[in-house]
Amino acid sequence: MRQTVTTVEEILAEGEEIATVAAVAKKRKIDRSAAYRRIRQCLDRGFLLNDEPFGKGKAMRISLGDPMPEDQSLLPTVEQVIALVKKLSAR
Image (cartoon, rainbow, N blue to C red):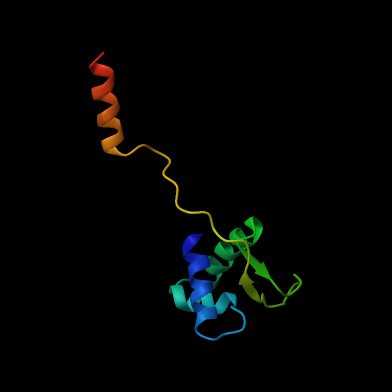
């Protein structure tokens, strides 16, 4: 998701008013269906906005939505595990 939002940011920074599925697909060098799927995930989570009402045959007009949260570590680092093991074995 972060790559998709970053790609939209890049497209907008290049002076484009809005981003499209085709522009994201071209920039990421992926198929339009893959770009659409990634964009939909970001839209569902609020990271991107579609300024065009959904409808069959209507092109999405994509803009930035809520900021993405910072990267968070789900697992402890190796250093943290080693420190914990040393602390527990010292008991």
